[in-house]
Image (tube, rainbow, N blue to C red; front, side, top):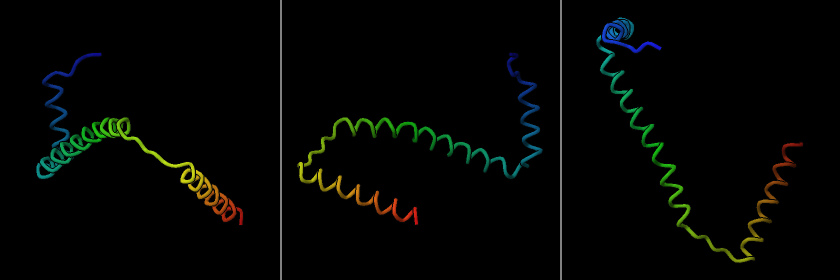
Length: 85
C-alpha cells in the first residue's frame, strides 16, 4: 500500500476546507481533540476499576446471602408474571 505524501495531504486538507469551511475547522479540530481525550480516559478507567475490584473484599453472613437470593428470586417472579400478562 503506498504511503500518503505531502501532495496527497494538501489535497485532503483542501477538500476538508471546502466541505467544512474556514469558520468550522477550529471547532471541528477542538471537538476531535476532546473526543480523543475522552477516548483515552475511557481506556484508562477499566484498568482502574479492575484494580479496585481485586483489592476489595466483601463479606456477608449466610442470612444476608439467603435474604438477597430470596429478594432476587421474588423480583424475577414478579417480572415474569408481569411480562406474561
